[in-house]
Length: 87
Image (cartoon, rainbow, N blue to C red; front, side, top):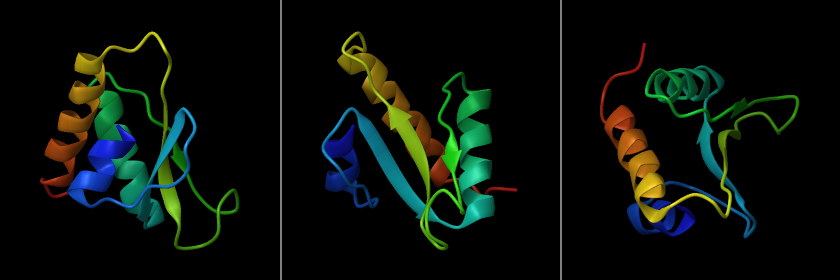
């Protein structure tokens, strides 16, 4: 998942099973999280004061039981959401 983010341009960090996607804007982060939830993918939004202002992010927590196809589904669902206007 992290490699997909890096290859396609979104800002990420770290090297653990937790893969952050830094979105910056609080409202946008919450909207993306809700859209993913509507698709059956739980990804919490992390916002200030937990992280610094302007660095809100989605927190993807991967497990060893996840398959490559599940990770591809997460990435493609996220890509679809990011390409549509958010309310």
